[in-house]
Amino acid sequence: MNIALLLLRGAFRRGDAAPALAEGARVVRSYGTLIERVRRLSAGLTAAGVKPGDRVALFMANRPDYIEIMLATWWTGAAVVPVNAGLAPDELAVILADAAPRLIFTSPDLAAACPQGIAMDSPAWMALFDHGPGPVAPMEVSAQALAWLFFTSGTTGRPKGAMIHHGALMAMTQGFLTDVDTLPVGTPMLHFAPLSHGSGLYTLPCFAVGGTQVLPAAPGFRPVDVAALTEHWPGACFFAAPTMVRRLVQQARSSGILPTGLRTIIYGGAPLYPADAREAADTLGPVFAQIYGQGESPMTITAQSRDAFTAALMQEDDPFLQSVGRPFLGSDIRIADADDRPLPTGEIGEVLVRGPAVCAGYRNDPDATARTFGGGWLRTGDLGRLDARGLLTLEGRSKELIITGGSNVYPIEVETVLLDHPDVTDAAVVGIPHPDWGEAVTAFVASDRDAATLAPELDALCRERIARFKAPKAYHVRDSLPGNAYGKIVKRALVASVQSRN
Image (cartoon, rainbow, N blue to C red):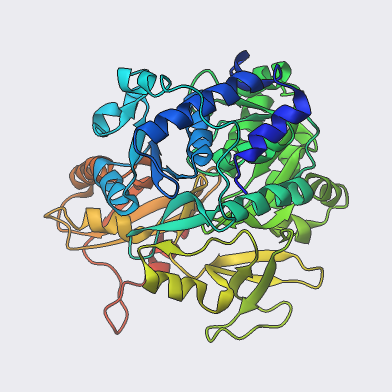
């Protein structure tokens, strides 16, 4: 099998002339043209030394070429390494050293940060299309062959490469079409979120139904663009973090301009609380579905389908809305205690999952693989409970993961940077509940400096060393940080100290 076969399936369902890629309202590739370019690019990759089993890294902003490279890489039997375009140079270097890609592609705006990469529109990029058409079909590979090497930070701050195979991506695609939304033939998929994350994977169910991948003409998510795009591409879907949903609702309410052509917003990465869900549905209509997943089981642990979500709203079923739904097609979930023993219905423990979409482990990290995937179950690090209806409700995270705007931040990554400042003697980073971001990254530091002068220096240091979304939104300077008898900082006391002031 090869996940790139979904491109051919889409062409069979819609025809070569059907639109495959678009920028804003403009079609840039038909299915026939896209297949031809993917074949040519796959031949160019082969000529450049890319072999089956190799890895090709993409460090670039959203653009049509991103999808072409993904498909051409799979066409040759190689694996895609999607890299967050917001990473700092040091973070990028760590990932590239671990992934050891044969080639790296980058967009012109990021070329200076990745000089070893092939920049789009450069002579080296153009030359890759000069080697004639490649094979008429993707190279046949095993279902267990690596397809998507996704780097997700661990609790130590060291990125871990989750090895997602072709079979896992096919299971994700099938699960989407059965458990999230049964897309009609030709459904457009809007890509406001980064293709390096969930949005990139949602190209697959879209291609499976002969849909059109639509990238906004201006990069990033601007709520004002949604109404125009859904009017031009009626029946469109897109993936969004809850913070994007809230911004869209605010924009629609303030302007009175509604995205009337919208079919589905699939949200994930953080909860959309019942009151927010009702406000969003009242404003935008019954267009919501929810997914819960991780990089190790991409978008595929549980789901609330669009129809089920709408029914729960109509029935005022708050327990359903507070949950993250039921297990994906073919997946099993159990709740376990600290000794890995199953817990009964209603009790809170760690969420474990197994199924065809779970990845094969971490690249170059057998110890972390054994800890996280031992016994055939993925230990998510999330705390949750199952109710009598089989609904999973998350109650917190056993790890100190902060989810802000749908992006994951591990405190130790930020704390390490803060402690490099010569005037900081101790540091702790926590997530504070925030109405728009889900959680706001918040820093507490011990120092004898004045907060008014130290906080700007810390902010500049963080923005230089780590990705912008990881930088704290607030800095609290204290003489000392609270500790327990073992000298460990009591983070819950820090969170409580902020919440008591609000």
